Length: 203
Image (cartoon, rainbow, N blue to C red):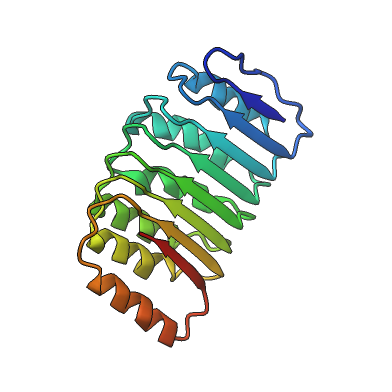
């Protein structure tokens, strides 16, 4: 099922229980949080979930209500969560960690560009994501946040330690990343190590 709301389109409020692929797009609609939560709670057999809520005035305090219903969808194998261009900053690890309990989750895409996220929050999030034991592919996007070379390096260092991960894509374009020496050394050292993960870093 695909539900969309862009500049006035109506969001459906009922989802057939048998639906496996659920896509919810409510970009530019800051008043649709409750409808999205309602859809998520009905998607109990979903194996693939794509939620796009760009420019929805989402702040830290809204995230628990949004992510808890996702953490209860125990059949999920793939999640794409686009929360770009909102007001999300600190405490990301506390909100995202509830998804780590999903037993079948293999693919996770987190798109958090254009949020006031700094290095400290990024480090905490990367440590939390290490606990996602079933992940095989991880894509994280933090374009135009408040990230320095330190934060980018910590992302690579911590996320590559996820136990069964075989592909990692990190997108940190348009940040204040000036000194790339540490990051380049880290990537070079990773290539010489025994860690066999396909790592792509976009700067």
